[in-house]
Amino acid sequence: ENQRLNQLLGFKEQKQPFLVEGVRITGKNPGNWFNTLTIDKGSNDQVAVNMAVVNDLGLIGRVIDVGGNWATVRTIVDGQSSVSAIIERTRDNGMVKGNNSLTFEDGMCRMINLPLDSDVVAGDRVITSGLGEIFPKGIPIGEVTEVLEEERDMYKTAIVQPHADFLRLEEVLVIRRAEVKAGVVK
Image (tube, rainbow, N blue to C red; front, side, top):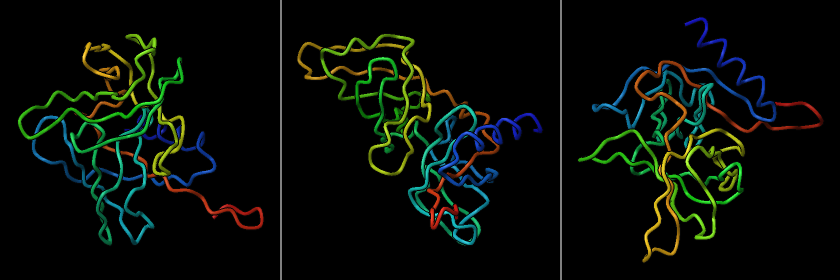
């Protein structure tokens, strides 16, 4: 636990224009890959809907519901999740969507809408693009394991293995944008 918390602290110190709040996971939805998580902080701790959630390995998801002392997080492997992302090496933009649904779970993601001329290959890293103002730019998401190219499709699709281990999550960080007034971060 001490090692995990030190790694989270290291991530927190790298992301200075943002305020980062450490939280514990208190609940997980049924299933193997945990499409949603419950955390032990809420509106009383300034946690709000659409705040990004990460750990030291990368992106976990975003807050979708908040109570006084709890919040619900939709993870990136959930089929209802979507994140604007970039292939780090090629700078190609796309959308990372979770593969998990009610009838199928594999803990993977798909990066859709990649340009046909993209030279994305297995092993390429995927990071957040910063578009959409929910997820800060540059948070690691995962690694491409396979590239799918159908002749009838207008885009390429990459299968992405998330960096985070969704089966063994215990602590995460909630990121909120810092307010800077007269040179003071609040």
